[in-house]
Length: 265
Length: 222
Image (cartoon, rainbow over all chains, first blue to last red; front, side, top):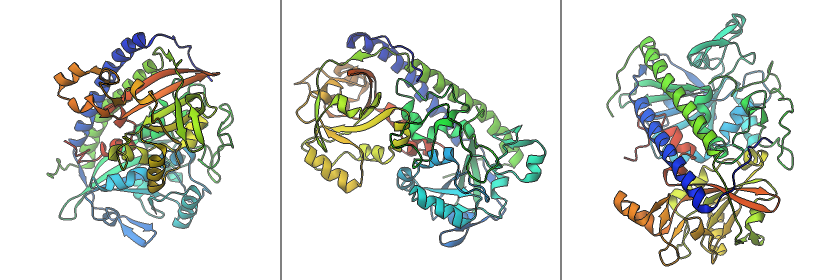
């Protein structure tokens, strides 16, 4: 494991260094506050296209997904129709969703996960992972393509796909991670307010926020891509350790590895 | 709430891409600050702390559970309280899935000053399985500045003295239980304190707040 040697000092000396770092942390907190405020001032786009999803209780429109609240967050979980299990990196993020859902609901936010796999495949994987959040299928809908998180064979054949507001090399697995935010007003009109992809999703992974506090940090520099160490939470060894250089196995059924955290900064 | 300007997809994209540049700057500023944090000096812990845990008394060393790094959530639960703090409970609901931290050689434990029986009852009510220890009767909470009592030690919370809190108008931070997260490193049997964060530094760890930051209404806590 890579770790720089640390200078061992008295508590008084540590306090001097810690307070200097605290000033920098506070600056960054204020910068985050400012960026969040700017985000809330972005313009919106009215959504006129009807989208229908398969959910646990049958067909649901985008409006239905709000479940009576005015704000909707959609997490686009990479689980393609042919895949046998969900993406490891998305599963890592999804391990942090259940704790947030009830608190978000009390802030007028409904949280829903969407994947392109048919519903039975979603439900089987959800059960295996022990998750409770709402997860619907966009199978057969344009939803994923319109929000730039799924790519058709035609898209992929062109060699470049549009993701994170730019053209990039096509992901051979055909799916990519993202989050979308929608607002529904009193008249029932729906607006798209925000989309985020790639490293824009990092801060939603609680374990990353914690790892940023420990001496070794995320410790990913030597890996093939940032989340190469991540496994499904039921697939770590008994002692939880994973061998960092071990190859990253792609989800079964996908063509290649889903390098969700790779090269998107 | 009032609508933000409603525009075409093309116009939205112009604004969004411009904002993406700012988000990327912020991401890089976070990366840089995280790198600086890892260079902070560390302090050797020579004092022996004994906690009460589910399987009996435990030393700070035991809380590492064999791993090299330990994160402690200082959960506000005064011995006289009947239940744990609501905000700390929210924080624990958002706790990271521990196998991922374990895979990174990092243990996670919760410590409160309430006696173990109160902790265990509350933990059961919440349906949690997280390792949660009592520091009742120990100096631990005072030494790591999450229980503030002038009769025991001079006030220091979030690296501010009592006079500084008085000046800042944050007198609520000058007595009783306070929230925080502390990080320790183990080298053999030697233990080092590397980092502590308090107040809004704790808030950044919770995905709920970060999700709310993406929504039109924001955190709504003004």
